[in-house]
Image 1 (cartoon, rainbow, N blue to C red):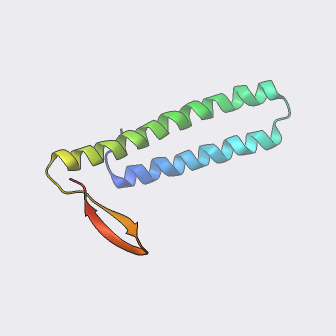
Image 2: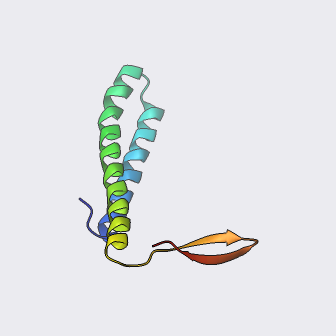
Length: 87
């Protein structure tokens, strides 16, 4: 479980490395069956890590909303950025 921004950055870097490894396998593996078998473990791990990232981002947003903190978003209107209070 991701608990802070440093862990988030580390897992995002790990996802990038795994994606690069799958890309490399795709270039060098000539047998489709071997490629699928080799890449499937990477895909499963990438999916698991991406789920962790989504849960961390969702949890942070929910915790801010339930703790009484106001969440401010910025939307473009006629070329200007104006903050909108959400919660």
